[in-house]
Length: 258
Image (tube, rainbow, N blue to C red; front, side, top):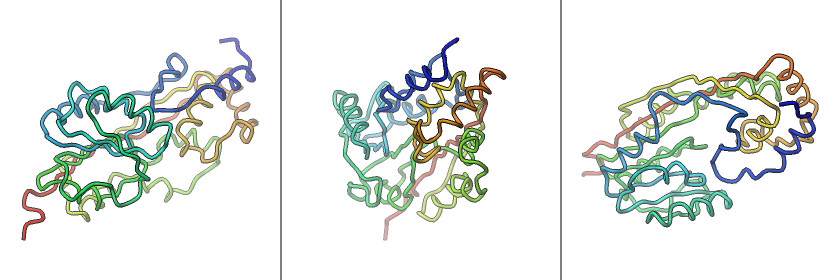
């Protein structure tokens, strides 16, 4: 691109990172998409139910992109800037957006929903999901998997303990669902190539996805950012791999019956 390190970093450090729209990265970074097509599958499931809940909806972009919402559609979000974006997108569609701390309990009654969904939840409270699902109801989600973008994270933080990555392992999700009384009917992991074509893309990504390098600031990591910039200029895009898995878990139809 011919732009200097300082120009690229200053630009990326100044733009808004509210919401969950990554279009600012178009032409600057790429990420392979999972083969299953979460939003399409989400739309199919929402069209078949009467009441659904989207947990940690972010700015509501994924939910707003489905063709039709059920008669009762609720969404939760904890971060105020995202909450405002989600309300603006989802209220016109008839959805209720609820401020929630992402800590138990969910602010809904027992057995309130046929379907609970979430794309990339930071935390998954399985007992709460099971509680708000009706018997026969389904949890359907795309989770971030273990060691996602490990090459990027360790470039800035150094080697990380393996046990820290395993907290997001699909096997743990399967066990958590089972402990809550849910039957996992689908579990599909994939590893997906990511490329960052300039250092501005890296800065934007780390400012937006705040759990990758906790406490990230340009000032705090300027030397490592410069090292990465020089590497990209000399060797080409910085490559890492995200991990994702699709999970679908069903509450038994005879649950909660005496």
